[in-house]
Image: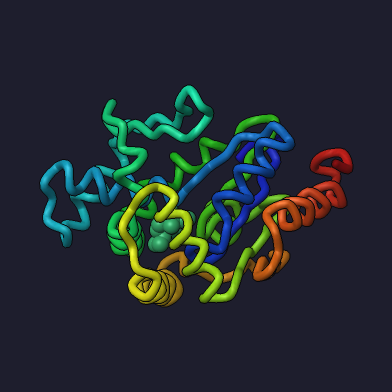
Length: 230
Ligand code: C5P
């Protein structure tokens, strides 16, 4: 992190709306965006592509350090993620890929291998970083830290609607179970567990619209003089 690149971190459990809120806030103020969860998803995917044993920690750490990733946009402005030149945008968004990500994310060697790659996203005019440990480990000096939650029911429903919108065949009950399992693993792991930074602002987005949450984050940033009142 450099002095001239302020960072806003948005952490929280699965499907709390971090991705959407981070993208909206970054777009609004013209800052860069780091979707750190995508990096863990990419490591798991790269491991599959390289035929690694799912328990091969060192192999996955090497994949994390060496993988060639391009975060881009498709012609409609939607996200497009390339791994070793292959479009993996859809492949890494399934709940199975999320489970794979959560497994490799528990390994310290993988987390260490991704640390510098994540910090390199902090470039002027600023960065909005979305994940689980952005405020606690990766950017402890962030100027504004948000911890975004929502009730378990609402998070499962949001994820269900998101996946259904992409045409995936999913069941709400199965998703609820998988999200609970992933959150339990993310919260219980020894390294960089999902936990609010002591200086984080907690926002419970249950029953709030995207606009309301974005407005709240923009307001908190303005109070800290990160951007003019919006
Ligand atoms: O945010 P997303 O659902 O894409 O993250 C996938 C998984 O990656 C999470 O369940 C978590 O295990 C891991 N992750 C992490 N640290 C981050 C971001 C994601 O451990 N900063």
